[in-house]
Amino acid sequence: MKKYISVLFITGIILLTGCKDVEVFYPIPLSTSALFVIKTSGGSYSDTVFIPSDDIIKDVTKKLADSGLERRHLHKVVLEGVAITIKEPSVQNIVVSGDLYIRYGSSQFTGIMKLNNVNLSETEGKPQSDILTPAGVSVLDQALQDIIFTSNVASNIAVRSSGSLAPGTPGDVTFAMLVEFTITTVVKKKQSIFDPLG
Image (cartoon, rainbow, N blue to C red; front, side):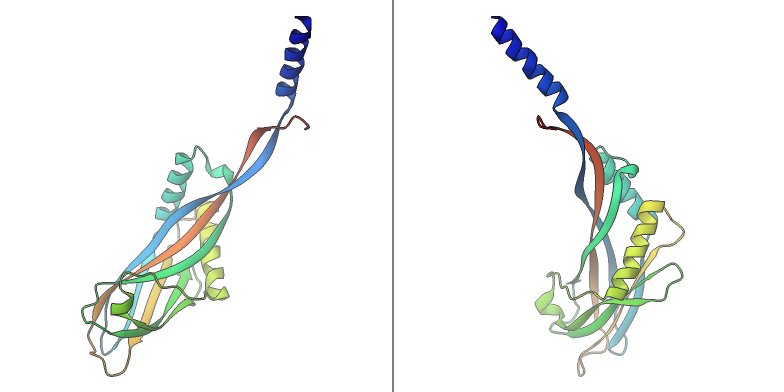
C-alpha cells in the first residue's frame, strides 16, 4: 500500500512541476475587400474606392475576442495575396486589361497587381490573381501595420482600378469587380504545456 502511495505522490509532483510556459504563435485571418461597380466610357475606366481603417480595426478586435484574445497578443500581420473577381458584365466576351493601385496616407498611388487580357464572361465569378509588385505590397503592409497595431484611423486605404477594353469592343460596358485581400494576423500567447523533462 505504501508503495502505491509513493508512486501516486511522485506522479503528482511530476504533474505539478512538469508544466512550463511557452510562446505559441497562430494565425487569425481577416476579411478585407473593395467592391467596384465599373462603367467604362470610351472603352476605358478608372475608379477609386476606400477601405475604412476603422472597419479593419473592428474586424481584428472581433476576431481576437472570438478567440479569447486581446490586442496585446498581436505579433505581426501578413498579406497573403490579392484576388479579383468579375461579376455581372453587361456585355459578353469583353476583354479587359488594367491595373490595381494602392494608396495610404500621403503616399502616391502605387501599382500592386495587373489584369492582362481577361475575358469578363470566361472569368465571371472566378477569382483572378497575379504576381504582386513589391512596392504595392510595401504600401499595403505599412497601412496594415499602422491600422492594426496603432489603431490609426486617420487614413483609409484607397484602392484604384483602371484599365481599358480590347480594341473594337463596345465603348460602354458595366461590370462589378470585387477585390479581396487575403490578410493574416499572427498572434502570440503564452501557454502552459506538460513537459515532464522541463
